[in-house]
Image (cartoon, rainbow, N blue to C red):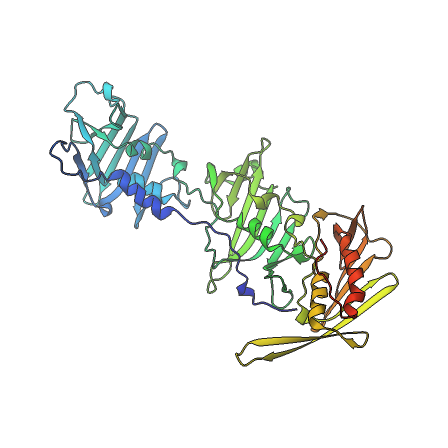
Length: 484
């Protein structure tokens, strides 16, 4: 059969990241638009702080949920308590940017004697910044500003009350875990990423599932399109490229609903049930032709109430997650519906038999290069010493390889008696032949044995159609390849 280069089998499953857009929006939240000149509208905005981002050294936010300490870490900021944890950088930037530039939409009251009416007698949040030149700045946030869309605030060294944008209420109200990045598994480039191998285990699988990308040395390609992966456990079969790709894609770009634990220890890990997981995906993937294989392991535990928790190896975060397709897939879900798709140029002999009848077709293929430099293959087919019309035989061959399971997955069925029909493919490269055998099954159904193993049923009309077609093709007649 035709071989394909391993690295040409690129699997598509990606989403487009929004981090860049988030950064732009964050900037707009903190930057008041320049007012248009108007003879009738006064500009009531007040600049309270104007620094460069690089000036900010550290920031402490104290709100109703606790204390958050940010410190500069190169171009961004680290957050105490989340060391080594992937951070939601746009959210971090939104919070820190609020103590770089601050513009009030208006002055609420000069030196009020009663701060309680602004909620500033007991502010719900205080943020204090330290800058690289040693200077400091503090802002206190009170209640929402009625009718003007904002939050009342006071800043250090100023007794007046101002109205700040509502973004300050949002960005100073977060708890520690709100700053954890909620993307568990990486976004991937749809044109570059290849999953080399995948193993699925856990209580949700009746049997472990393993698959790997098609290998030049041991796997086969298809006449109907690229076979990207072969299933090797629990049985060896081609993966359905559509359903299999969708399943693999669900492992990537997984998002958490919330964060359950950070910096957990082994006892917490065990308490959530990860030692006996509901589902685990272990894979190696490649993000480009030049890059090496990257390991990724995702483990899911299921609580008694059905809540799903997930961890990713190397990240000390337990997330609450939604169900994903890969967590409950099965062999029957992803196996190719077509049993065999051997490329005719790689086949040396096809033998079709049923009780009392046998038809043998030998195929020789000559390959040459035409004047345009394109490789061209020419098939010669013989049966019973006679040369057959190649194009008419190809219609018959198309019928043979169109055997398709009907989704009736069966387990533990054993072949009984003689098959109603058998199709054997032998290959010019040698090796073991492939054999499909069809046994009597339920009403208008047959059990299909693929190299001795029954997995599926299919409609018996296929068997009838092949039996009718064999004497037609040896007589160089026209065969209709459609049997459904």
